[in-house]
Figure (cartoon, rainbow over the protein chains, first blue to last red):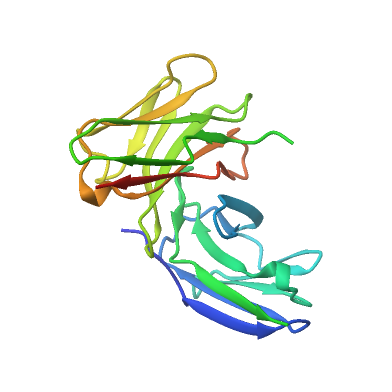
Amino acid sequence: GEDVEQSLFLSVREGDSSVINCTYTDSSSTYLYWYKQEPGAGLQLLTYIFSNMDMKQDQRLTVLLNKKDKHLSLRIADTQTGDSAIYFCADGGATNKLIFGTGTLLAVQP
Amino acid sequence: EPEVTQTPSHQVTQMGQEVILRCVPISNHLYFYWYRQILGQKVEFLVSFYNNEISEKSEIFDDQFSVERPDGSNFTLKIRSTKLEDSAMYFCASSGGSVTGELFFGEGSRLTVL
């Protein structure tokens, strides 16, 4: 079945760029998403990319998609302590059902 | 800004008891979902619901689970006889059915089964 994999942990210093990586298996994905989960909170949609695009920029966020390798990344420029959270990659597949990765815990050191 | 709301935020129950988790989706949304996240594990799809019926369900969503939209605003998940392994955070989500397909999630209901 479909699967989404992410690295579990990333630590960066405040002001640096963060890059969170994700791989997926479903070749019928239409959209891919990045969600953010702060402690004790729900899943907040950060951004998404259409599978026919290879890049999308939204303020400090840059999403790169390599459809051939089924690799998705989220770059956060000028990372702040408020960016500390768990980031989930999600694969939209052929239906509205989302398949989530394990989540990457981003720790931002002051 | 419209949001998905869930109640209760935390419920503790004894094994074998019935639990109902409640959700109020965003008002003009048409698609509703339940996901769960066992501590330290992935967020897993349970069920999707559209036009007053289940449109898709996962292997996890067995006969112990049911969903209902009892009125025009609530969407509920019932677990008939809870097991220890049902302990998890349960997330409700809704979608307007846009082509971009994004889901909007509630803050979750933490279920602890003792």
